[in-house]
Image (tube, rainbow, N blue to C red; front, top):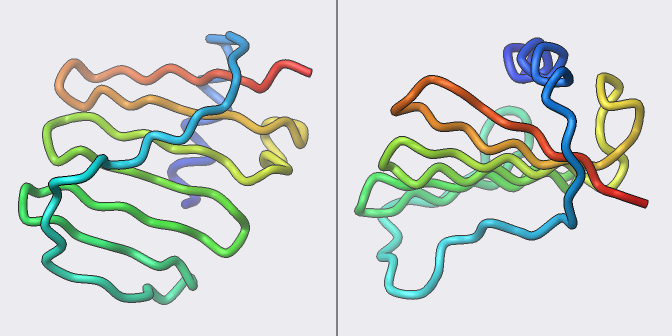
Length: 104
């Protein structure tokens, strides 16, 4: 999580506005494992290599297992975002990420 917040500070240069939409896996995914990690996040792993994390703060992370990740902050954003909710798309295949902030 600390690594993520460091990346958010760098990503703040790419300001865009958006309407938050949840990037959830659609039907047809077979769950291979579920549980709760040491930070209190519930996780679900899928047989295709994808996984999700849901944190008690309301944040959510979904990794497709195919080189893309989607992070949605909780409703209060983060300290780095000034409390503004945001979503980050990570393209691990091409080595970039984009962050979009909720427009009020």
